[in-house]
Length: 495
Ligand SMILES: *[C@@H]1O[C@H](CO)[C@@H](O)[C@H](O)[C@H]1NC(C)=O
Ligand SMILES: *[C@@H]1O[C@H](CO)[C@@H](O)[C@H](O)[C@H]1NC(C)=O
Ligand SMILES: *[C@@H]1O[C@H](CO)[C@@H](O)[C@H](O)[C@H]1NC(C)=O
Image (cartoon, rainbow, N blue to C red; front, side):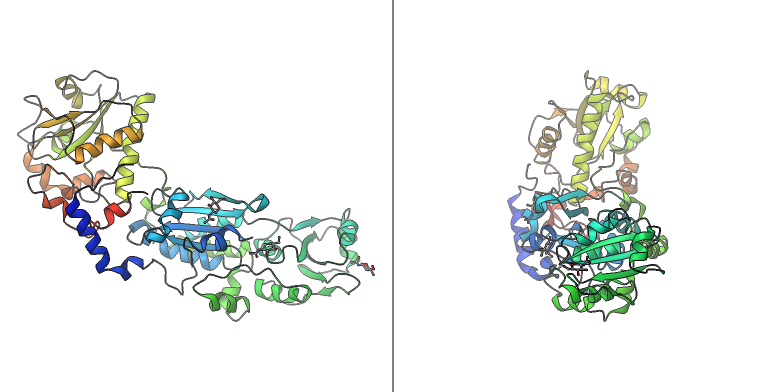
């Protein structure tokens, strides 16, 4: 990785800014009262890694727009998953969490991952690339809740009952062939305390043994020669846990450090609406599906999995190329010349550029635009010839205003392309003079007056503030904008 902001003046500005705003810096996106559990580097191991529950974790930065957009849906998912799985968030902007975020492979915000207990206590971490809606999150997480519920049939009822006869067992008699998230969560609460099983209504022998005639029915076998107890409450998490607790205490799954009292009291069943939400996976999915259809909080762009960088835009028309890059007012443009039918090398080069642009956009750092142009297209083939390029894939940077261009020489790996881009930002490396006639005099008015055009570069937020050390007004790039303050830029470099 290369540091982009080596300007010492800016670094000092950043430090000053930070020390002036210590509390703002530490503030996360979620309130203490949020159903989303806030986890930090210190509590991650305890609350997430060592939990018997499945968790979904959002790695975010408070300033990130997509993270703010996700918040309502994420909180909704947390409410719906209450009692079934843990919905957590890590503020990667917090210095203390940076190492954790880096270790977890977080490269953009928000990044969602699921963590569930694996074999031998080693957590299984997976990327969540599903839709950024409450329903999407709930569905995937419910699917990943570990299942410790034993399905017992007429054939194995005897052996189930006789194994460890002195230890407690609970059986849910049900008409369903699937195991609900609710029952799975109950089994997790009582791991190694009460063996939880389910038996279908059609297992006549087992049903008759317990005289079951209505479904669902939960039966507790406290162990030894104690008589079985039939539950007559509602099929809701807290009430069921309370009932089963007569045979043994549930595991003390760690409560969120901040809202200790709160979570516990929910368990003790005084928050009726919360309880209702954990009724079963089916019902929670239903709730969210109706709710998420009305949730317009996640704009379509944010639905894209964060790991996939959007491709850089292609320019296929000469006018457009002139307007973006080849006029006397144009700032630095990076052009990737590739054949219209991409070969392997072209893909590699374009991917490297897309990732780089994406990374900068996520760090809210302004970077000059990247465009794909085609060696076999009239719009760009003459430029290709004028620059005396000949490779199958060529990357150049050019600046119409200053009349220079630079030729990239190297493999097309992200690292190599990135250090070249770095050098340009620092005004290092070999510049060549643009040949006569390449830069058009005509289209110059359109170039800067229509910054909206550059929005097509999806990753760019405002191209006017591009950081360009060789710019005539060097202070321009260092000015804070609402989207990007200089303080933020270096802070996210390692991500
Ligand atoms: C949590 O578990 C993952 C996966 O095993 C591991 O890479 C990570 O270091 C653990 N994190 C902490 C904070 O212990
Ligand atoms: C467990 O064993 C005891 C005697 O050791 C017996 O009375 C009881 O019925 C058994 N319970 C079950 C559920 O099999
Ligand atoms: C997880 O389950 C085990 C039993 O397998 C139990 O001993 C432990 O306390 C549970 N951990 C938590 C954090 O609940």
